[in-house]
Structure formats: structure tokens, C-alpha cells
Amino acid sequence: MVVKLEGAVDSEMVDKLIQAENDCPHGEELIVFFSSQGGSADSMEVLIDIINESEKISVVKVYSIIYSAGFILTMKCQKYVEVLEGCLGMAHRAAFPSVGVKDNLKIPNELREEMILASKSAKKLIKDLIKLDIFSKKEIKRIRKGDDVFFSCKRLREMREVIWSPIQMEIDEYIEEYKARMEAEQEKIVEEENTKTEESTPDKAKAQRKTTKKIETNLEVKE
Image (tube, rainbow, N blue to C red; front, side, top):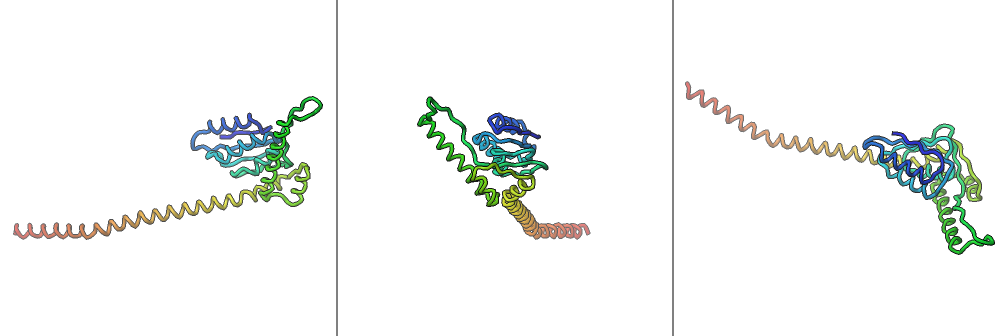
């Protein structure tokens, strides 16, 4: 099953992914095509959580543009991401929502507090993104300066490789451990069967000797 998430990262996009997740039959793969110019940080976090926790989603294919929240989602995704040819990315400092003002452009205290908290959250998003170690020093400098920093398809693939490599290593290690457990269990089963066979062999031989002796005795009686 395929779902296309395109446009602003918002509650509608979240609802569309949830619907696709619910509609996808058990045991069937859900492939996500994703493109966005950005949007809500809250909706972005929900989308990331759904994708990372889903047992049906194994791959996210990004195309066209992945800007702002779309870029962060792509880089924080713990599933395999395929960057389709021609896709462009863009990262910048996250912005908090605009708030209403009252007379004389004065900002009420409660709104000022909300702005401060939102600003801290926006700064944390960028800090966490930088911690992924996907940017060059020059790119980090420009992002912190407040520039919109654009990335080519090739650069996006390089970034995803940095993120995906350790995840792939964990997957490979898990597969090897699983294979080793299965082989050990199979060897144990074979060993137990061989042991049972060896234990039952003397009894079978004894029973065979008794049968042979009985036949010989009967033959002597007849003679």
C-alpha cells in the first residue's frame, strides 16, 4: 500500500498518515512518499513518532522538496529513507508562531511567556538537528546565522547515510544474533533426537534377541 504526504506539515497530513496506517492490511508494507515545504513543529513530531513506531512502514521516499519541518522529519526518521532524484532540501532556524498584540503594539505578559517558551523549543530543534552530525562547519555557521541553507539531492543522500549507517549496523547485528540462536536451537533439537535414538537402540536390540530366541525355541518344539 502507498500513501503520498505532500504539502504543509499539519494536522491534515497527520490524519492522512494515521488513516493509511489503519487501512493498510496486517502483514502488508506501507510505503510513504513525502514532500513538504515545512509547517507545524507539533505535527512534525507526531509524524516522526508514527513513522518510527510503525511496524508497517519500512521505507520513506522523499521527492521534490523537503524544507524546514520536512527536512527535520526526513533526518529524524529511523526508517530507511530513499531520496529520489531531483529532490532538494532546506534547513534553517525554526520559527515560533506569530502571536496577537493589543493596543499600542504591546505584548501581554502571558503571550510574552508563550513566545519565550516557543523560542526555546525552536532553538532546541536546531540543536538536536546539529547533534546528528550531518552538517559541515560552514553549514552550521550559516544556519545559526539565520540563513536558509539549501542541499542538493546528493548532499541529502550523504546526510541520510550518516544517520542510517549505525541503524543498519544494529539491524545486521540483530539478524546475525537471530540466525545464531536459530542454528543453536536446531543443533539442540538434533542432539536431543540423537540421544533419544541412542537410548532406545539397546532396548530394540534386546527385544529383537528375545524374538529371535522365541522363534528358535518354537522351531525346536516342532521338530
